[in-house]
Length: 593
Image (cartoon, rainbow, N blue to C red; front, side, top):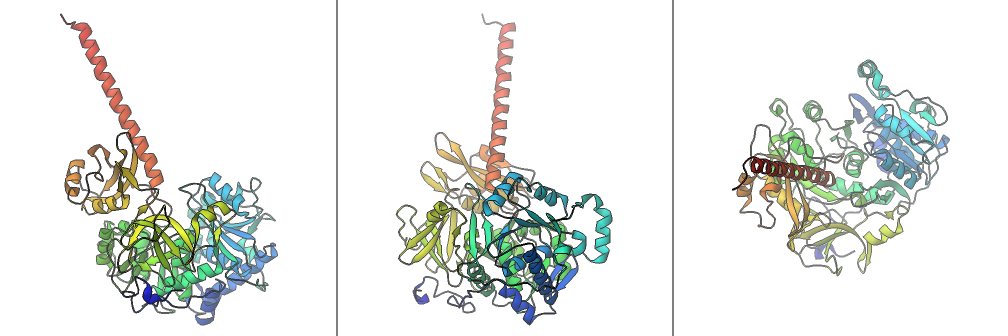
């Protein structure tokens, strides 16, 4: 490992965070064992006012592990999580790890074909879900058409406090699935009705996989990133070190991001457990519920995505609620506009820092310091033990500081490779004299102090007459306008320019803005080739499309824009046709002499 004093960020790295700190290579479930040992009576989980102490959680995990073992789950088997944020997720996640099984996270909102492909690709024979028809019915269809053999079903009424459980039975009686339990469909009650005396597996942290985290598949077929116990243990500690003011056993984490997403899995669930803290679990993000929860339950830590912070900023009745318990927020998943960051910090008094990572890096790779300088537009400094290199996309040579190139990452959190996909593994895992590094596919640069900036995805960069336009830069400038609530920028084909810039905008309630006025606002900050034409500034009444964690979905945005522009062109052609027919009719009645 190079001497940290040789690194660009060494001079400015915050004194409270040791870049060279030792990072554990251990079974990931050790973080839970330590919390159970040190904080047995602390509340670990708060799910809609039903509480589980660490002692109770540890016991539930042991009984779930014994139940899985009795089903035949052994080391190396894949156990699927088809679950929203519930105690079932946490219990089965750590139970599987204790057996040496591999957790496979599934997004319950995926289309059936995507779920089917992921089950078959991962080889999941056992999966867990809840008795909510929208997820249960989808999963049951997979039996008989995939390799899935057994489904574990958790009852929602069992994880609610008594009064809420009774109300749920009444109000949601038509929204509760009715599984026929047996050998293929197993009740979680039955699974955990044992003494918890399971036989733990021997774990080699560096080689044994803990999680298969499937990428979103926006640039092709979804791929399973193989994350080892060492990868996730290291990244949990790296993320914990980013919070030097956090107090062991005393922090409360608000968990609104879905745990099946790698950012929430590490930065919310695993970090909170490593702190011996309390997780306030919400099954999904609901704006009003999240604000009321912060007001009532006083969380101190709130990792989220920019869209969530932005939604809270614009909540119409925000003045009725006190959000000032929150001290630290780590923003990830998408670029954090400076205006969104500053407004949320003003509302709450907290520190919002932007981080960066990928499924392939467990996921956190860089972050702005919570007690150091946050540079506008930067994704921060490399987290402890991590090297960021900016590389020429073609020659693969390291570039000078300030030059834009592909961001590459070396560190203990970098995945082992892609599951059953040696070709893609070879494409992104690059061997160098300094060690193996991950090609991210993101374009960025590093300033003289080691702060990293993402200029854009290589695939999202827009080429206009040979000039490079980065959508995130255009979005950042548009967000400065006080009337703008949301914006997204994409490129579309253009016969004369190669590509042209399209800006999609949703305005704040009660605000108005024209394409001409926005262009005038941007004229001093955007180059002429980056400036969208008036006809390519599109205003929308509805929220822009998002992924399940609230990240702008450029893929869906492109589909929406293509449909709208096609409809507008058809309308113009119809109008032109009507005018031509009108002229022909007029000529027929009034022939020229």
